[in-house]
Amino acid sequence: MPGVTVNEVARRVGLKPNHLSSWRRLAREGKLVVPDLPGAEFALAVLEPAPASVEEDAKPLAAVEIIHGGTTIRLEASASPDRIAGIVRALGRGS
Image (cartoon, rainbow, N blue to C red; front, side, top):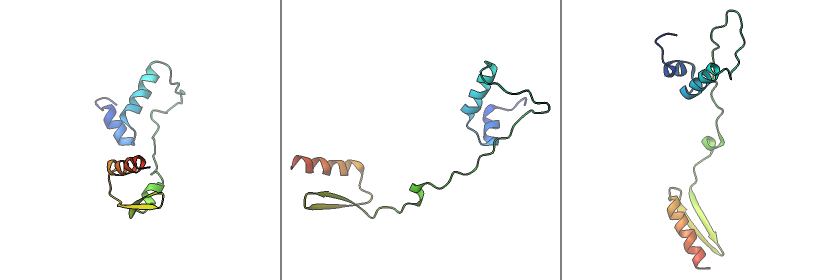
């Protein structure tokens, strides 16, 4: 398709440009064997939506709980990983 970029073709058919470029390079190098079918010029790639992941369906946590011995520490769900890690380190030093 003269005048059309790899990015345009990839976007039009829902592929990543680097995949299309890789396939073109492999074909030029003779490493991608394409059957010689009469009348075949292009095969359309159809992508279906990915099924919903478990993470998308999961409800957000109301709180983070750290249980250490007989002590329970409850933090808001938005507590940063650094804050949680700091508390865990402090609990470990106190043991």
